[in-house]
Length: 424
Image (cartoon, rainbow, N blue to C red):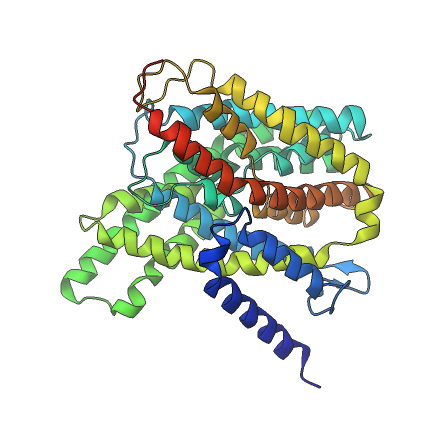
């Protein structure tokens, strides 16, 4: 009998072969690759062949899940930064500012209200739930993000930049929820949360993203003038930029995800040869796709029927309100008076605003925040409650957003994106 590890390698290799060779057909269907990975992951879990086991003797390996999801989010947010070539002007980034500064808090506090009023949580637990589920995912949302550096579409730009900047306002509230779990007297830690986890961590994340990325590019250019690096090794500069930016930022208590996204923006603008960031983007996207396969396989393998059923009504309430009310209404409020950059319309087309509201995709980012919370104090019954609501929400998002992304984006490109220059 072959070793289980060998069988796992065989299954993953076969899956990669099938989705790669069939990608031309899959891309034309109302079906995402993540749905395929999820189904295969379920078959590899305890209800199938039992090849992937994150639970041993009833103990869930949250640390492994945290590290895997951390890496794939890092790769993804750096790629988001590399895709964006727009000028760093407030007018150009107006849609991003609205989605982060207005939509994110609206989503977090609306979800927190649901947790407090309907799910029996206290405010700390409810805010943690909101912080985990509010951010859109930079990994699974790739189908509705910018397709390349020449793509100037504002819907795709908004979703890409929102995915890259999510943790600028989500992570502080993850910390808020964790602090509240440990100490219900907010007065003992609230000032520290404001000064360190909100102001300092965001500011240092931005600064470190700029400084580290510019330093790496400067060092590379100096060395390359004397002796060029091996072409096969050159793309690894992108990985080194990600890891150095993230680690150095975390050392000074900054938000590493934010710094890595900023580093992607800086790298895109720091090379005179535009082919270099393009090559890095291509390499990063390939690594991201590979890590996405592993992450969604793991998600499928950890799903259990009984606990999902136990929290099914709570999950259904959260999913319905989040997908159909909280996110769409939050987007509608956030985009009031927003005028498209490339159109003579005075405001966004209602269809565009509706698509912004619909494509609030949940995925790997929420898995990371959940695993992080497990490693920092989330446990017991409330931990089970938040975990299974999160897992179920991600699964539903993978399915409904995966099925709807292709037809809706085709409709958008056919009927809305081509009417940018139309008069109101």
